[in-house]
Amino acid sequence: MVDQQKTFITKEGLKKIEEELFELKTVKRKEIADRIREAKELGDLSENAEYTEAKDEQAITETRILDLEQKIKNAQVITHKKNKHIVQVGSTVTVIGTLKTEATYTLVGSSEANPSKNFISNESPLGKAFLGKKTGDTAVVQTPRGEMSYQIKSIE
View 1 (cartoon, one colour):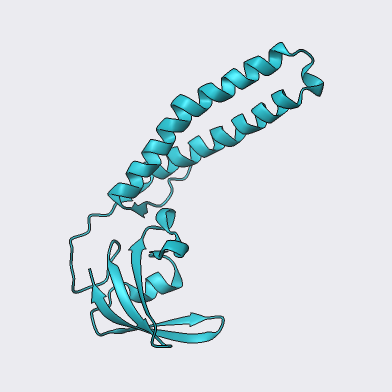
View 2 (view 1 turned 90 degrees about the vertical axis):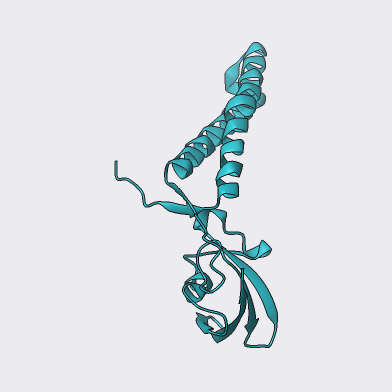
């Protein structure tokens, strides 16, 4: 099996993944096993919707467990050095966009990205444009609507 590339993740993000994995392995697996056992007691499995549904949920849960275990295996915890001079993974950046609108983004690894909460991946076009920039620099990003520029106002 080919070893996957390391995935950047914050300490908090890794903790969330570990908590979800623990919950799935200790609570969810038991709940599903109980549902399967109860459904088997109902008789004919070929026409037992409860059994089929529980088995489907079991497959989804086991896939999620494998996915989380892989994420943990490939996780590289971000050791953010609180450099307020250069944008790096873990930085929170306030920018002024082309339309003179201000926005704040936090650069995270791809597994933690959540654009609706302004957590952007270091691998995204915007994240790549911000990396290595300093306060006052301009980051330029190609979008479907054309070129957008963002002036770095502050870095935390």
